[in-house]
Length: 324
Length: 267
Image (cartoon, rainbow over all chains, first blue to last red; front, side, top):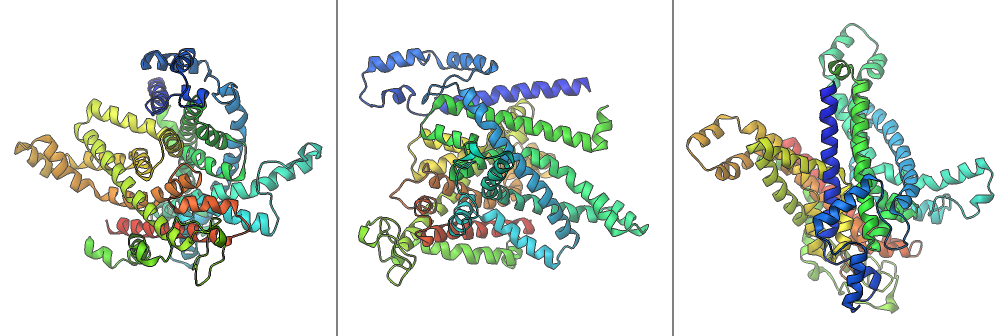
């Protein structure tokens, strides 16, 4: 057990160093210099841009720059934003709860909708419901999320006026009572959460369907059927368990996909989360902020993978006992 | 395999979707009365009519023409980007699987590291730091999505390299690069084909999101994604600008997904 944990820790450390190296390389190998942002003028005098470069340590060799940056990261110091001068880590800290919160809701919805959907479709393979969900799944794979967002905004936001189409709270949010506040945020979240869940929903229901079909053919299900166990118990106890396990893992692995998707829906619905921050950083060519967000997003992925591993080990006795 | 796949219903449906779209896009000039970049403010935001079958956008440009030329962008980005990622992925994956040891360890660690990033974050960063043109977009999508093919081909190569025909090739004294390129890769390519077909669909979606966000194909060159940027600002005024480009992306992606599914079934 101890050896296993040690191996995992070394692996994580290697991955972390690699992540920072890639984030650094992506920015540094790209054409153009951050000093250009301050000048706002291509013809700025060379001694001015030299001074700026010196101020940010850009005149040092690349490996030294990387080492300094890396040491600062270990102290959670990602430098200051090039556009508004605030600490990068503070800006990210502000935005993370919003994006994580929304994505947790999204994951919960995906989990609680796709498994029953896949279970039902797979158990009655070839039936009417199966055909219907298959069509829905193919549609879900193919719909561009930003287009879906535009259509929903047009219909439910503009035409029917049911839901607000931008931001997280209304203008007069501060004057609301608590239940009003909760209702207000919920109303703002309906469309973004629907858009964010739609694509992954298709993938996971497809997956749970094929898993259900696979399990239904297994010998232990046949044994359960032949000893006369009611179908209801077989489906809810035996098949459900077998489907849920791998789905937990997949949800843990879906962190990078969900974060990438956040850029799209947060930008469209103007939700002030990490995705919108990343979009703004990219549009402003804010190098330090981009680097910080790249590292943080990759670390979130690592955490997601680890949680998935732990959940799997906790839920699957075969792994739990082997390790002890 | 080829004969089986032609009878596959999914494959036929997918082809029935993709071929007309490809035909219209490739021969776009033959099917358009207007130039896709000709601005005519007097005709701005016209609803679909005989004159303009899909209406006009906020600058009076003919939407039908823009859609056809936009199709060229989507399809070519899809194919070229996937081509790049397949070439990178197949070579790295085959080398990792064939040599094993520290080569394998190094390549697969690098794959793990790349997979930690949301690929859309990397794509946005690279697109913002370079001057986005259609070729750069192809390249960027290609170099951020080779990890899937690399993993698939490595797994195949690992099981193939112990088989007799590879041992035979080795004992005949064939050079290693020849064994990898002529014997291992062709036999391991099956799962990558499925991945590549689905990858075209994914690349088209990524390009359109990127162009929608303003970091992809730049106006005045039309792409299905950047037409939808215009749609956002005319929300509620011109439903046709929102409906048609999105529908085109949807149908094209659906077509490639169906073909991919059919290829998977036939393996």
